[in-house]
Length: 264
Image 1: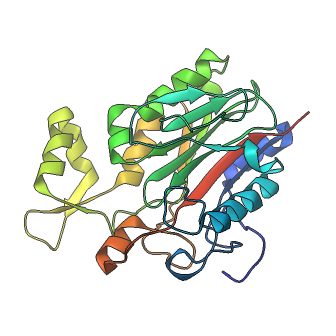
Image 2: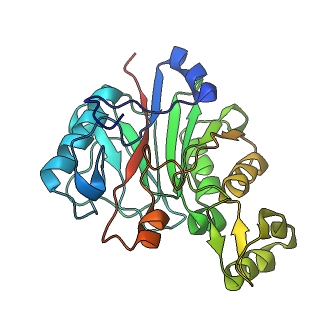
């Protein structure tokens, strides 16, 4: 699949229903890119050490699939924060530091760059307001999902009309964490112990980031689901920071998940 010349993103059946209202989305894989070596495929990571010209070409291919010019594909400088920005036009100069983007402007594709963290795409198709969030454990834990919904509401969305879908991210069978990680979650809410299961490593646990993320979305009052695709396990399709770490590779690529309001 990596020898294909065009991107072939994973789609969400729930978000596909918004296509009729002119909302296009895709959870992009490694398929259809020009990067080679450890970055083989559609690496859009501007923060990676991949050849910048190849990354730019990969991003241009994603933008073309989304139906926008290359400079209208916007991803923030992600810092594992709960911060959200509202965009109305392409970035001028350095990308802002944030972990979610919302917009009500047609022709601007907004995205989340990931390599195990959870990409969440949001849409209120009636109000024509969209969002994209990068939700690793820290962002989800500190409120990036709830803040994205609030930012969409500030533009006129209604949370009961928002659909949110978690794309490919690391699954519970491959996300081992230490005791201090478990303690942090349980101190915040004793019910969080339900997101952990025993690990083969003494004192460690396996964390279900996917279910934690979807449950937080549901609690905030939106319609939510996860695609159930694991970035660590599906090596042919997805980049994975943790897989790279386990293999002691020097760097890793990033995939993007994006959504756009098509021009009416």
